[in-house]
Length: 214
Image (cartoon, rainbow, N blue to C red; front, side, top):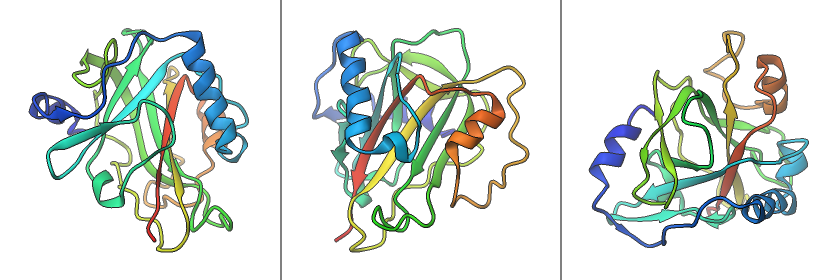
């Protein structure tokens, strides 16, 4: 998401439809972890999820409004989620690099996920930048290098039911290397296996949204 810096600057005056949030609390983190289990992301995508920070995605719609995912599971229309979202994080260190990933584990459908998971985004060398104009006490993630896979908006098959689009953030380990990954082949991505092979460990933050085409 090399356009993140541009988006944050250009959209600072856009009308928001969600309020700013308070600081991170253990209750907030526990709620997000519980929602991941309720939604089946644990174990479909991750064996476990115990976040130490809160993640927010802000989607800017063509009609010049925006919607911030303040609680996982928000429904976003396909056409409203084609631009790269602004990524904001609350409760992490400013002095580390991070890896961001977005996957769809429901390809071609949740009932028959034979192509699980499709990788919609993979970006190393993310860091915390300026304060978010969308979420109180959060900071926007910015790219130090180009994304490995640029953000690809959701495009689930019509009639396949709601798809879960899961955003996860990892602390980038020293010597992070992914040349073994076929970046052109986004389907069948084993995120847990990738995290283990690269030494990323468990994610420190995450959220998800739902998109369905009837």
